[in-house]
Image (cartoon, rainbow, N blue to C red; front, side, top):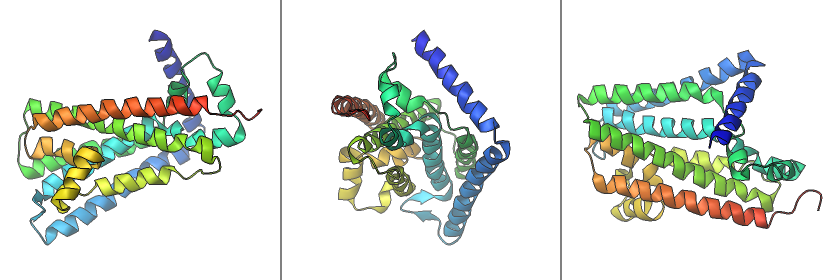
Length: 261
């Protein structure tokens, strides 16, 4: 474990050095992320200017819901940005160098680059959570905050697993560099509460395809009250997703043909 921590610190240092080479671009990307969240907030304010709630979600609740997506997405993009490079590495043959290194290749391919420009989105998202709680005039208990944080990290695990599996298909598809757009589509859908869908769709997005875990289920812990069943379900989905994505990655590595073969 200590060895992997030293390797990850090296990844962090090299990622920061890369960003500081073009500081203006780095600052511009952070500013762009914050502006995008600002536009989203403006849309929420316009919507709730004409209605007190949407499917039972008041304005403050919607702030927490949207912020949860931004926080989850920012954490995923910050820590696992290098997943998007898998198809390029397959096409250019640089994946050969990764799988021959004396370190777990999934760890290397997942965490090689830290995306520092997501810091702006993360801070803005946390600010939105605090603002949403203040708007709702509620005081979540410590148990609610704990459950919320656990479910956010469970959502990150599920979203990471989804992206890993999706980008791993690039080993066979090769010339597909825009697979990450599917992940962006998923986060766009997650910004809406599950309650706007029919009951059957809600259950499907909770128990079959855990789209609700990316935002609605964690946000409910803060604005609707602690639900131990949903906490357990979130942990279950996180463990299952990590297990399945790991198996799929191992399967892909066994069938990977190097650039030299």
